[in-house]
Image (spheres, rainbow, N blue to C red):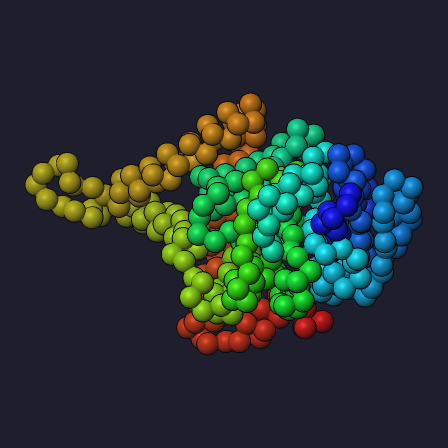
Length: 359
C-alpha cells in the first residue's frame, strides 16, 4: 500500500493468555492487513511468546518480554521498539471488528490528527454481567457518556484500551508518564499542552470485556476515582464540576439513608411541625421521599439497559453495576481530593500504588 500510514498495534499484556488469543484472532480477520503487532509481555510468570508464535504465520508480530512495570511503561517500551509511524494501543481484553484498521486508516487519511480514541461496546458473546458493566461505563446516563460515543464534549480524552498517537507526538511528549492508573487522560492533557489535538473516531469501536466480577469492577472504578484529583493537580485548570457527580451521588444516598434511619429510631420527631398537615413530615417520611429521585433514576437505567440489550437481566445488573460504579468512584475521588487538597499530601505518598516509580 504505497504511501500508506505505517501502523503499529501495541499490546501491553500481563498474563491473560486466553484474552490475548482472542484479540490476535480478531486482528487476523482485519480487512486492512497492513500493520504490525508489537506484543510487550509485562513480566508474565509464564511467557506469552508461544501464543505470539501461533499467529506469526498470519500476522506481522514482534514479541518482547520485560520486567513488570505496569501498562504505561510497557506501552512506551513498545513504541520504542515499533517500526510504524502511528501507534495504536489495544488492551488484551478487547476484540476488534473486521473493519477496525480500515476505519482508523480512513479517518487518518481524510482528517489527520496526532492522537485519537475510539469507543467501546459489548459483544453479543459477552456475559450478562460484562454487558451490564459495559453499559454503566459507556451510557450517556452515567459518567461514561464520552466513551459511549458522544462527539462533542469539550476535548476528547482517549482511553488506552483503544487509543492511537503518532510517532511525532510520542517523541514530543515522551509517551505515558509515571501513573499506573489514569495514565491515558494524563497523556491526553500532556498532548494538549504540547499543542497536539485529540479526536474521537466514533466508528473505530472495539468490543471491551472489562471486569468479570463486581468486586474487580468496584476496585477498578475506585482507582479511577482516586486518579482524577491527581490528574487535576498535575494539569491545573483541567478540573470540571462533572467529576464530582459520583461523589455527590454517594453523599446524597448517605444523607437520605441517615435521615430515614433517624426517623426509624425516633418516629415521634418531625422535621417541620406546623399546623398544615401537608408540611408535617417526620424524618422517616422525609427519608423515604428523598429516595424517590434515586429510584426514578435507577428505573430509567433499568429500562434503558433492558431495551438496548433486549434482556431484563442485563437491565437489572446494569442498575447494580451503575450503583457500584458511582459509590466506589465517588468514594475514591473524595478520599483523594481530601488527602491532596485538605491534608496537602503528595500524591506519590498518599497513593504509591498509582505510580510506577514506587516499584
